[in-house]
Image (cartoon, rainbow, N blue to C red; front, side):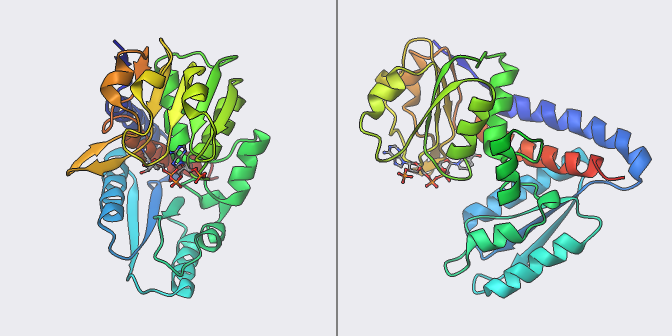
Length: 281
Ligand code: NDP
């Protein structure tokens, strides 16, 4: 039976450590770190995510500022909100909550965030830094997965790792981070011919598809580490992309959904912001 990788507990520990770091550096900077969010429209999921981010930020001692725009906001207005946070000295990091309403180009908006204020680590310059192995804010969800693997002291060097899903937010940066840690990485997606076979050869499996139970438990190799990034709502309940019970019977470690990767994504956002603040003269 697999050991649970408890993201909720690790996120609480990370927040407590960050709180201590904030108190320490506050003596030098004489102001708290500031985290900003641009929230466009009234998507209920996005509203929940933004509330969770604000709550975590406040717990760690950050100042939080949310700029809200209506669902029919024009792209120019969203860019103006980004410019406003770019210019605000008390905001050290911020993000634009995705997805944006149709008609607003996400890539244009994300690229407008100053790379040195990019709390989400999704600016093209910071993604480029990841590709080159240079220090920069890292995308929060894959950074959270790495924190979870590290907390359980899971060795990655030389391991066969399979990442399922190739989004710019999760799958692609996840593959790069595992590669940075010397895993042998295979990146799978909807055109992968034999997903069951690829997963069956993996010692570490990270799944970020967005389809409940798409990865079958009996595909998992005995003793593999399974990280389920997926968040799906089924009959009012949150569930992952992996068949949890069947996968748990074979895996050595597995993340629950909820309570696995989700809380760490938020903790990494706060960590990125604290680190951007600590770099200030
Ligand atoms: P996207 O929809 O952007 O990407 C999904 C990826 O999965 C695509 O690359 C797609 O392939 C691939 N895919 C879809 N179906 C299959 C399939 N049957 N077999 C193999 N690959 C498939 O999603 P995101 O990366 O943004 O998110 C993925 C999941 O993770 C979602 O459930 C989301 O809610 C969750 N999530 C969780 C976070 C957390 O904090 N825990 C944070 C961010 C996301 P192709 O490219 O070929 O279309």
